[in-house]
Length: 446
Image (cartoon, rainbow, N blue to C red):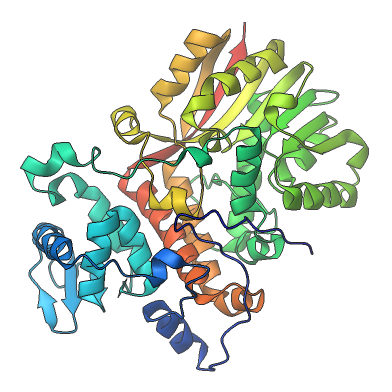
């Protein structure tokens, strides 16, 4: 296994390199809980997690705003000094503030970025993080005093220019996430190594085997919708770890698949070889902007979110250019409400800083606008899968949390493990609350 890591970017950005796992040995469940509350923070790797902002005045203001929110949220809040007034009953999800002063000061300095960093630092925890985050998301508009609500998006940090998805920037942004380690992803993904929403068709409540079936069902549905069969010329933008390319090639298609992740390319090529379809697949390390030719079917699963608004015209123009007349495109994309997208599109969030640099979740309206203005493509089929993504994320999160010792053995430290668990819970809550959705969208070229 080879592993590449993002370079240190400065400006307080993280550098999640590997370190030896901690030497203190506790029972597994106790050790995971202890890590969650007080992880050892390397200040070189996690500068903004190790450093607690020092502005006490702003911290006191944040304390008042947070307590205003707690009093209206359907949650319970405890501190070392006792419970705080909140709107939740005895069965409401619990927020445990272990270091309230640090929590408030991080909120004051970074807003929701500070909220996530506070979780990474162990300032707070939750026995049921998804329930907690879902409850907060569902009442988000009521948490801020009404006179201050118009200032929410104005005061959010702006996205750094270095995160733009130029050709070099896109490679760097993709490497930040996808080139962490194939072994890391293998610990929580199912056997298909598919990192996108499955299609459960109501078969929920199971585990990895059920998820693998859901992923195959999702992929086969998309291949059916774009008419992949014998000798179909298929282009895949965003390879993942090769499941879609292999399943298309098994149908007799000739598949070209492009990715910016070396780790994904190498494993996808190996999987195609093991499946006996290597001669029907061409898996390349390439930017979608570099692809030429015409294809009967173009498939892009949860890749458009990483393109960035500035490059949507280039991306959708490329889809149009690369699709043969009469051809079809199968696009699976996470989506959000159009007004929310417009209000937050320039903001720098915790997700940008630590998980997916440079991306923006589009709205369906934004996709339709790009098609109308720049292409000869039209939407012919749509299906929302938000509930299926919530179930997918539940299985990923539970599997990841159960594998914390194996993640540590790979060299990822306690802050990374807290960050990744929070990321999975945060996304699951987004789908459960309806804040975000995911759709399979089929387009045809007139």
